[in-house]
Image (tube, rainbow, N blue to C red):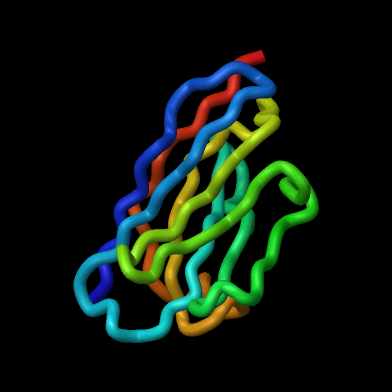
Length: 120
């Protein structure tokens, strides 16, 4: 029903910044919460950040607080992840997700992922 396409990944040096985008298409009439997960090679997928449909509520994993900021533009059906002060351990495939609410994002839709590589 809903397609999510991530973009904005790439290779950056430690301390640099990237902004990821996730564009939603298809049946987007629902008021979806949206967010980001990431998965490094050989590691489990982990939660990064999420935002409610209205944008009033956000949630962040402890390891990104103060460095990453999630935002959304509902008019363009797009969610963003501004990543600053990137560290090598941030290297992973970043996946966009959409669901009924922040707590149930993992039960919703997923994008194909975008690679973020941070060099030392």
